[in-house]
Amino acid sequence: MRKPIRPLLLWRVWLVLGLMAIVAGCASEAYVRDIDPSRPGTPLAGTGPESQDVLVIADKMMRSLLGTPTIANASRPPTIALIELKNKSRFAVNSDIFLRKLRVTLNSKAAGRMIFLDRENMELVRKEREAKRAGELSADPSLQQKAIAGADYFLTGNVDGLSNASQFGREDYLLYTFRMVDAESSAMVWEDEYETKRVAQEDAVYR
Amino acid sequence: MKKMLYTGLLALALGTGVAGIATGCRTEGALPAQTVTGKGVTVENDEQFVLLDKALKGKLSFHNPISRRVDNGRLEIVVELRNRTREPLIVNLSTVFRDGEGVTLNDESAWQPVFLGPAQTQVYRVTSITEQAAYFTVRARLQ
Image (cartoon, rainbow over all chains, first blue to last red; front, side, top):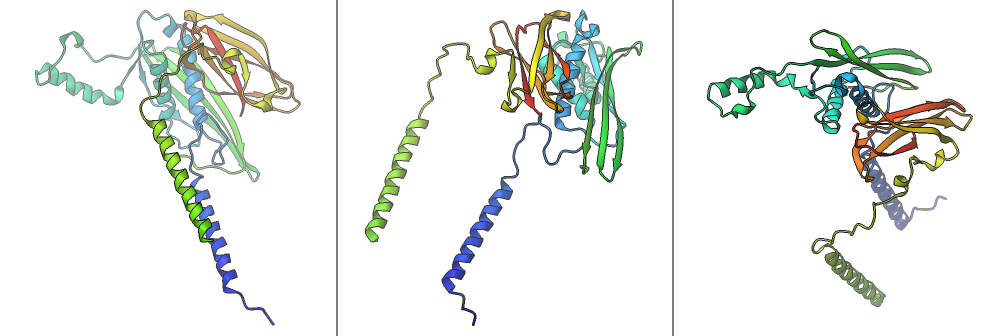
């Protein structure tokens, strides 16, 4: 004959189960945490561009660019306009992040060596200039210029990739190339590269 | 039983009160600035080459380091890295540059991955951003 379950024992079981549920709830909350962007290898990492690549590329290109005679020996800081990076890899990533990070790194760490032109806000600048010259807005005459600054150089680049996949996983080789082009002669005055090759059993989704 | 309960509650109340007073004393008013007694020397600042992970000890070594002035007076560091194991080794390297007084400049290179085959030697090269750099520390960590 089966023994009847005592109510006290049942109550204890429910208490233990409740505590376990609370602990499990806390554990899942703790998973959201800040991590070092210079570190690879989180469980979510894939074979494509990662945050550590953005940091290394910006730093490496900045140091390389500062060493080029065009910048190092310039009598005045050259003006540079960014041209969108061409992404020819299979990864649908925001490729603007590479040039933008490079520009910010140069502006914050090597301020005054070169002047970047904001071509994204050309229309806004044009309207402001017209309003100042029409007397609608106040203006400091000493800061006025005959024309909007032109670019001495264009800074741009490409992301090229080679990919292969099999039943065992996926492999991606990515080549990031950056170049500075003379806006008058189209001569390439500087070029440098960075490459990654990664293999993984499972693919990650990039945005 | 009741006596034990009352004693426990009393102890808890006393403890909370003491903790509250102590916390109040600590947060009241601004703390005095710490007196600077030296250059703020740490273990890392003392060395030109540092292994940040204990696991790298005996696995990675630095050889033939050179520091020289290049274009525009920037400081270039060139050093050979040797994998002392029979396995492939991936390390991250970063360099901190300091001025003539040992103060850290806004010039810390990104953590660059270096791939070393078994017993392989590779060259790590980094150049400072400005000519103010006089001292440096190359740091290595496991990827």
